[in-house]
Image (cartoon, one colour):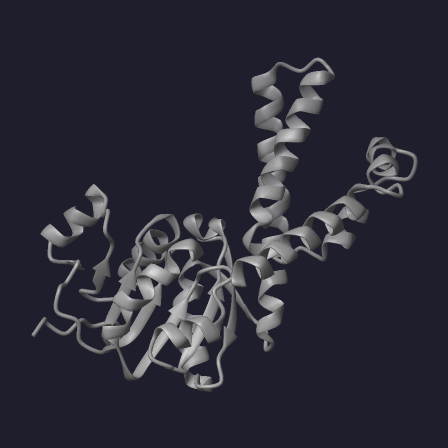
Length: 273
């Protein structure tokens, strides 16, 4: 039988160590939340092989045994193939965490032998730099202690929040999970607009990226609500007000984002179906 794995005194098995799974693993190893975890990944990178060689992780163990904590960090289109492989790692007391968009708890439970102790988590890519937002939704079989434990694990890569209705997870994915792409597009559009006003492209891009990152950090540090921060920057009759007259017109940026997030929410439901 394989050697027990310890994560805060409990066994941890991680399926999938791509960008997000890898970011979580790195944070958990750094903080001591995971010790000698099992990583199941068909295409491990060199960094995983190096960790295995140093004895920090076990890689692709072939003799499953019930784990205390099973983390499914695979893309939703691969979940149907992964669940039969993950099922042998699930025992009566296993807490299952899934970060796959669209994969419902009913689908996860069915693929894991009707297991009920499940929490869905939707992190986003800023977790890669410790500025992530992870939203939790617990199944009926998960306890308050399971929720607290999961929140602590994901706090290693940023902030956490909880929603009580699984139907809201599609909106969470549309807003928070997909949201970084909207911000990157904003920076891209700002840079292009600056270049259109005569700035060198490299200077315009640097200004846009620094502005978006700095504004985001102000919100992260709790300097105020977005509306308050916007008002603080806007002098009556000034340049910012002139630009906001365009962006806040009807239809404007708010209308466009509402339409985009609604469409992403629908797509999330389609993935679940």
